[in-house]
Length: 227
Image 1 (cartoon, rainbow, N blue to C red):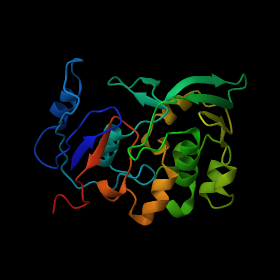
Image 2 (tube, one colour; image 1 turned 45 degrees about the horizontal axis):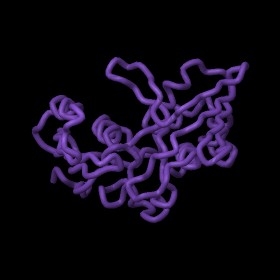
Image 3 (cartoon, one colour; image 1 turned 180 degrees about the vertical axis):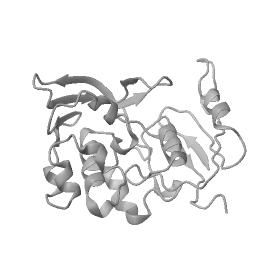
């Protein structure tokens, strides 16, 4: 699988083969004199299950998605959480409401802007029973998430709303001191609704049917590269 030119002008190559992931990640960091288009090799010992952030569940797929997508927060090499798309986060005194401003200059690989509504759509989709996500428990601290995952409430009742094009409001069922850590997980990354609806059930099953919002994008993965 190849990772191609992304919205920061970089290029990455992911090969399902023998090149080590560690060495490949090392190639990702470099000086400012690095060429605008670059190739990085990453390895995987098994076929990816998906590039759909709502449906992935295996380590290989999580690794690939981390190279091509970005959420509100991210983990560093030491497991500490840092802001990614989130530029400002305000937490209410009772610890149950998060108001999050997101970057204005980020685009999907198809040119669509990344907005707060992309997070609302992604999170609602993840807890919708028919989606089949194996990580709905990550949303348990959000208001109504458990009931939605159990099919008792509509996904529109999830405690997340876009209060502006680039502002997100999250209402928790109870204070959760580690909520920023949860928001750094891949299942809480945004999704471009237009792309998901365009490709339907095929979304995330190949490079051609996936869009990304990180510095790199996937190209050349057909879904069966190891066969």
